[in-house]
Length: 193
Image (cartoon, rainbow, N blue to C red):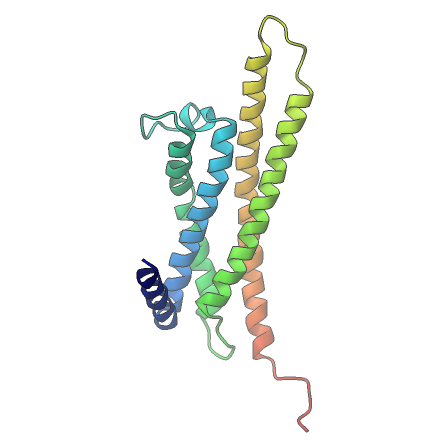
């Protein structure tokens, strides 16, 4: 098994060297899917009805894990592919300044996605805690209904936040890629000795 994983890793490295543009697009798509699945694994366990009631019914399941795996892919692959195309163009197009490798771009994107994921989880936890702190006194078993609605609001708000935060992060990363290329292309200000 370890030999097979090492072979796959070597093949990916060779592919990145030969096809950096495609590697950036595919890598970015994979990172977006990983983000979506990990994000949805948390949110689906807080309010699975966000996926089972308020989304198109794609599969007959109420399982939070199934919903996270399914919607983690459906809701993010297209964003990752689009962002990857944007990053690839910023990193590879144009002569006169050094190009960034797919490894450099994807390393930066991983860091950005981890930051956005952490901030999304902070939003979720904050809304969850606030919502549960303001629950009314239990009157005839209504607290469970209120809790369900507040959890759903927390999950929906976290998803909206994630879309906006990732769009802003993608724009910022594109600017960073371009700025990095320009900096790398400038002659050194140090005088040779």
